Length: 83
Image 1 (cartoon, rainbow, N blue to C red):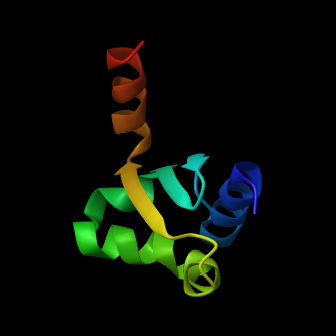
Image 2: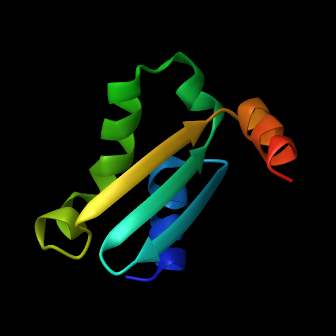
């Protein structure tokens, strides 16, 4: 699966505002952006993202995943801070 396909899957399945995916081999970095994350615990955020990817994790396509989640406002501040 390409980074774009993973991003598209997560955006579609979870109705997220934005998703960024980077990978190196079977190691993936995912940034997910949506206001749904504002009221969630860290564990719930991780579970939400893992859900649509569970078959790719199970078959070894995705071995290691780093997930960062942001609300829309948090993401705007993060982008400004790192520009």
